[in-house]
Amino acid sequence: MKFGVVVFPGSNCDADCFHAVQAATNEPVEYIWHKTDNLEGFDCIILPGGFSYGDYLRVGAIARFSPVMDAVINFAKGGGLVLGICNGFQVLLEAGLLPGAMRRNDNLQFICEDTFLKVENNGTPFTALCQENQVLKVPVAHGDGNYYCGEETLKELQQNNQVVFRYSDSTGEVTPKTNPNGSIDSIAGICNKEGNVLGMMPHPERCAEELLGNADGEIMFKSILATWQRRVR
Image: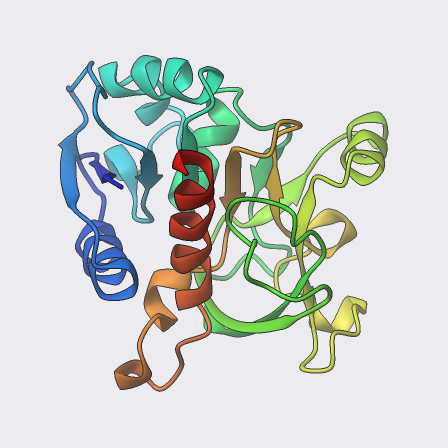
């Protein structure tokens, strides 16, 4: 399996994702410069966190028009796996690969802390090895992570089981107190209807090795590999 990590001007978690993929899967991974328009040969594309183009205009708004994003859109439409983390999630929203938008955190402050995520859908390629309702400890680091969508879109997300992660406590209980940024329905991550595109605000690459004090994020990269292996058998 071959992974690709997109690098935009302002990306700052690209090296983290690169290392996490290698450590968790031992599979080939390459950086993909934002001006690249050909993703042939890749099986999974990761849009990492950071501040693409300095987050000018609106988070992810400029990165969406990088040449690589047309290729990512076509890659996703063809069934390729796409994971957007933090700023990568914001870019996926701007590109229309996922519904909704991001607003400033409700406390108007940058948040950098560990959160607990309840796995609401373990039937995606990114959560295939997770148990139903499993709780993962994954850090967040963002100022614009307040996910929002209209009532009709939220209803569709819920009905189609597209809400993959919700902010919770360590036992999996979801309450307003466990929501760090004000996201509607405590949403921390969603997927498209087909399940091959996932956007999430927390950073699994920052908790993918015991050396970091927490390896809960490792399961996501291993899930991607396990899904791909099942496909090619």
